[in-house]
Length: 322
Length: 284
Image (cartoon, rainbow over all chains, first blue to last red; front, top):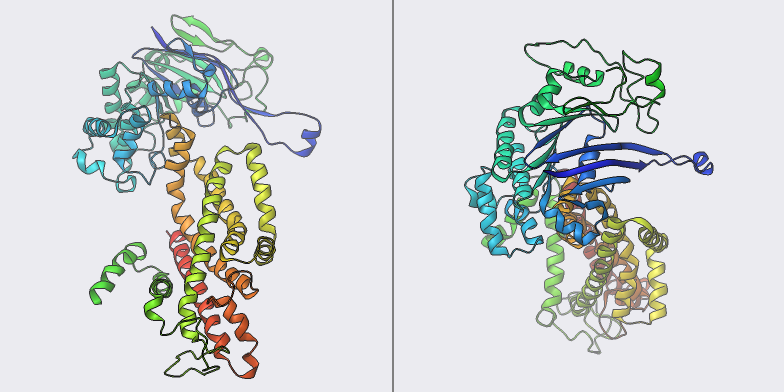
C-alpha cells in the first residue's frame, strides 16, 4: 500500500538575471528538482542520497510543500496535496512532518521546550492542559528525563543531541503517518548518532511510520532505509533496495558515490572515479547529466537523456551504458 | 536603601554581567527614573504653584527659589517639575503610537513581501527621507497646537524607524529554520508572525525604542519651543526654554539654562540606555 506517491515532480527557482537577459526576455531557472518520481509504502523508510547541491533538500521540502513545486503531483493518502488550498493544507500537515538537519536553528529560541512541542497540538485544536500531558509523555519517549525539568528549559540550555530529540518530539507528537528526516543526524555528534537513529527506528516500528530519509552518508542509509534512491543534479539516477544498491550499484555515479564512502575494510572497489564538481543546475549538460564527468560516457550519452528503467526486479537505473 | 539598590541591580547584572555598557545603562536609568518620579509626584515635589504669578520676578537661584523665578515671578524649579509631565506624556504617547503602527506593518511587509512590501517600503522611505524635525513641524502646524497633536506629529515621523528595523529583521528571521518548522506543523501566518518572529525582535525593538525616544525628546522640545505643543501658562520645558532665551543676554541665564539642561539630560539618558543595550546585543 503506497502512502506517498511523487510523480514527475519539478521545482524550479527563478534566477535573478542581468538587464541584458531581461531585455531579451530570457527567463532562467535553477532546476533544483527536475522530474522526480518515486513512491513510499506504509511503514517503509525510503532513503535519498546524493552529494550536496543535488537537490535532495529541495525535494524533501517540495514533497511537504514547504517549497511550492513548479509541476507534478504529490499524492498523499490518495490526495494530491499540491491541489489543496491553504486551510486544507494546514490540516493535512498534521499527518506529515519534518525533522530538520540543524537542531540549533530549528527551535524557536524564545519558546520553552514544552511550548515548542505543545504548539503543534494546540494549533490542531487540543486544549492546553491535555497538550501538556501529551508533551510530558513525549519527552519521556524521546529520552529527555526528568520530563518536568526539560519542559521548562529553553533551547540554548540543551546540547545538539538533546535539541534534535526535541525536534523529533515536535514532529512525532502529532502522530504523523509520514515523516521527512532531512539529514537528521548529520549535524549531531557522532557518539549520539546511533541513539538518535535508534529513536527514529523505534517510532517507525511503533506507529508504522513511513519516512523519507535524506542523507549523504551511505552507512546511515544502509542502517535504516529499506529502499534508496540516488540523486544527481535534480534527477533520480538509480533506485532499488538499499542492500542491492550498495552491493551492486549499476549507475556510474552511484558506484563512485559508494566508492567514496570511507570504510575500514573495503570488500569491493568499483574502480570508478568521477572528476570535477557538480555542474550548475541552471544549464545542466545536454543528454545524460553526468555525461561531462562520466568515464564511460559515449556519443549517445551527450545527446539523449536516459530514462529510469527497471533492469532487475525493483532495481531502476537511468544510464545508457547498463 | 542598600537593599533596594541591590534588588534593582540584580536584573541589570543579569543582562550585563561585567560587560561593557553597564555603567551607561545604570546612569541612563537613574536619570530617567528621577524624571519619571518627578512627573508622578510633581504635586509633592514642587514647592510652588508653577503657574502662580507673583511680584518676585527675575529672582536668581537662591534658597527660596533654587532655580530662580521668571519674568512673571513663577518658580522655575516648580515649572521644571511639572513640565516633566508634558514632555514624558507627549514623547511616550508618540513612541507608543509609532510602535503600534510601525511594528505590525514592518512585520507584515517583511513576512509577506511582494507588492504590498514594495508599496509600504516606498511610503516609509519617503517619510524617512524628510528631516524629522521639519516634517514634525509641518504636521503640527497643520493639526494645530496641542500636546496630542504634537504627539501625533512626532509619532508619524518615527514610524519608519520602527518599520525599517522590524522589516529588516523579519526578512532575516523568515528564512530561519524554526519559521519553516512552524509552517511544517501547520501554524497560521498570524501565529508565525506573532509567536515565532515577534518575540525574537523584542531586544532590537527595545534598542530602537530607547534611541528614538531620545530623538523624540529633542523633537518635542523643538515643537514646544515653536509653540506647537502646549499653550501657556502650562509649564513645559521647550516653551520655557524659548521664553527664557530672550532674556539670556540680559543676564537672566537661569531661565533658559535649567529647562535646556533637563531636555539635554533626559535625551542623553535615553540615548545612554539605548547605546548600552545595543552594545550588549551586538557583543554577544
